[in-house]
Length: 105
Image (cartoon, rainbow, N blue to C red; front, side):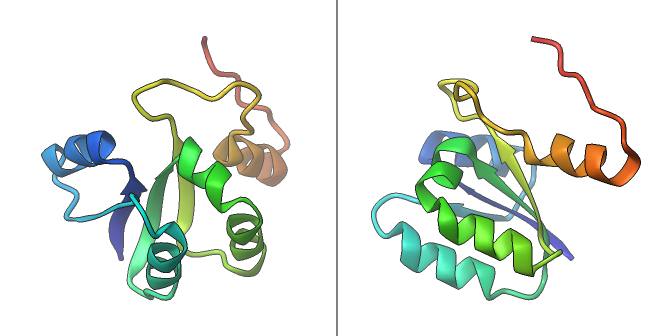
């Protein structure tokens, strides 16, 4: 399984420097790109910026309900965390083990 990222151009640079080869830059046609990525069967983890996750909204939520893989990890972009953003990975941990993961701010 591969690791991939769906992000803006600046964040993509960081992922490429970290050695991630499957980096998709969402600029103009986000829905077309999302449909292409979600149909790939070799991605195990997909990093996605909070802004793009927000833009995908219902489509991302529906995908998560229907699919366990890839695991989608939302990350902040260069502007930082979005206010009142739900950390989905922490939610999954709490759901699985019953313990809330606290983040330092």
